[in-house]
Length: 524
Image (cartoon, rainbow, N blue to C red; front, side, top):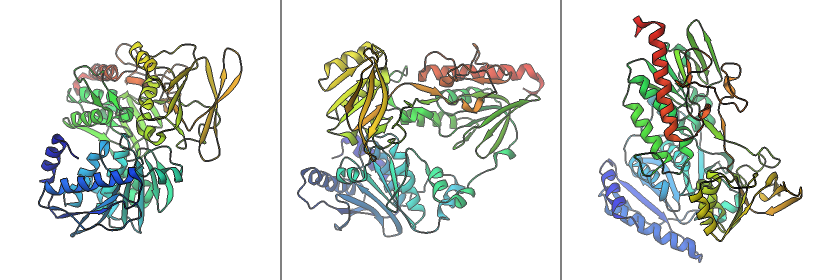
């Protein structure tokens, strides 16, 4: 089941287990060939894990509402963690962490957050539906597993949608991660422990928060925690000045990127791996990292800039704006109504949920064609719908596209509506821009890949922006406001690439430092 590399990795981790662990299987006893095969693989996986540590054993099979599945238990703990299906792919790390944490290895979170989770009252039964190709799912699965370890009132089952397709289809789940609480749809998308706690118990979450307004001013405040923000924070800190980086999550949109093959000197990586590397590099320096914050306003007065955030205001002598961009919406009827019900923006996350079905990809640029190629290996058929009369993707992608027999391309097509039956997507309506004729495509899913919008609405009236909302910058990353700099996808930087955003972040930080030393050299 496990290859040599994974076996060696897991054996090393299991050496950190402090308490005995019992893996309790609930095998599939039915006649379905897919589930029977998955059940056999599960038994094999559990047996292999048990051979790697004398603290791990496999218990007697027990009945469960979901089969195949297995629980990770310990005689010394009341933790309730279950995997329904095989936690491989992106979820292998979730399995490793669950083994360690149930086995007594401490949960690595801020103590205030751990205390807040332990303070949650009442019984809470969570179920997360995930796919093994989803890069966002592990964050949710790992957070809820850790919460179940910290608090016996919290229970969690992670359900692999490719194994339990009947349950996924019955609930109409078309986007992962999908989170259910006590049998009811509770949330979707990437959430960390703090975000889950905030929704679950606002009173408990409040105890883990800090009033940011009480902090002393910074020399450089970086707003945004993606590649541009991380680069800016590192370059600022290297100058020995007081630096903070604030954002919703370290990594930013990179966390939603599956494959990265154009980061020079790194032939291949994934978004989550790059985000981890960014965090590790930032942590090498004296940088205050403040996550789970959203900026709402920016004001400058008397040589000091104030940024209003979720949990208070931060002040700084200079600011670097690096809030990035987000996927654009189509803005057509049905899009919002059927979001997570067939309308999706992540082919890697949600593609497996459409196995054997017909889907459309709206967008003929690199992102759209990459999505179509990926989906072609999973779904029955892909239709690419492009507004322009030609596809704008790179030639290497177009050659691959043309070689795939289950992809059709429609150009000069304006998407006008997402169709559905009230619970799920049933089709896409578009206008032929040449003839004016309105046509319909019957399908189960629509993957929207039409470019990016800068996250700059909060800067309305604060700095100069273009009609598209991009922050106007000069060659040093400077904006229209002295002491305020910007970098990355939220700016007029022409090419929205990770490596370019990193360089732009460094430029903006150096620009900020130059600004500071010219304002008051004695203080630097």
